[in-house]
Image (cartoon, rainbow, N blue to C red):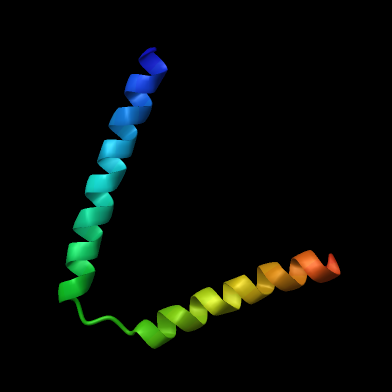
Amino acid sequence: MIRFVFIAIGLAVLCLVLLKLAKELKTANVDWKGIAFAFGFVALAFYLRHETGMG
């Protein structure tokens, strides 16, 4: 039972952090093209690793 309490508290803290981060990102000047390129590069690397088994 105590495990569920810790999980619930952890989820609540995670939600608060994500909400604060989202609020900060709305007001910040962020280079979204660069971030999208980085995520795409990582996703492509994982895909190619999965398909070829190399890397």
